[in-house]
Image 1 (cartoon, rainbow, N blue to C red):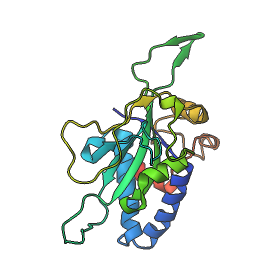
Image 2 (tube, one colour; image 1 turned 30 degrees about the vertical axis):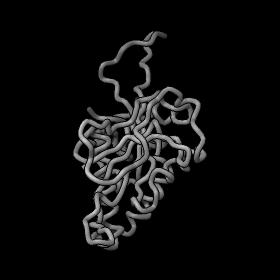
Image 3 (spheres, helix red, strand yellow; image 1 turned 90 degrees about the vertical axis):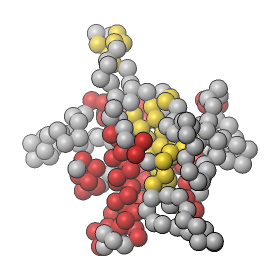
Image 4 (spheres, rainbow, N blue to C red; image 1 turned 135 degrees about the horizontal axis):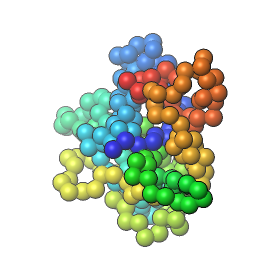
Length: 224
């Protein structure tokens, strides 16, 4: 199953910064971070999240309400505890998942079995920098305050470390597309699939209003 992928504007800025480092030296810490982020974003878009350890997020009195989010645990650098024990994956890609937009034909909603759901990538953050807090801030949520629209959704608890527990859900609850993302979602739904869009020289306006994902060169990395 493939998904439409939306990139949060602040993650887009992060990726632009990492890409500049990648161009200078692919083996630099930030260059490796860029490639790991691209690989994880591809996995999200292509429905290959099971290739990574994952964790459904949740809510607690001291945390942001992220019951509609999950994280991929992405290895970038090997880290060790004070006692020399190898730690788990060093970075987290936090994302949400949304239902497909309805298909309208002749003024009526019709079932489209090929309609794609959406995933929104919020941040790619080192574990030590509190990825869940970064995601909460980017969503404009206050620490310790439950989100009314998530009432009744059971989350997965706080992010954890160590081996992934068997049988634990690792993907987000799928919710309707938020109002502030409806326009982007509609453009993605109605645009040609990645790699099949008209070339700018043929159709200069083809991508003018397409929602921002990554930079043009970075998009090619995602499409490869």
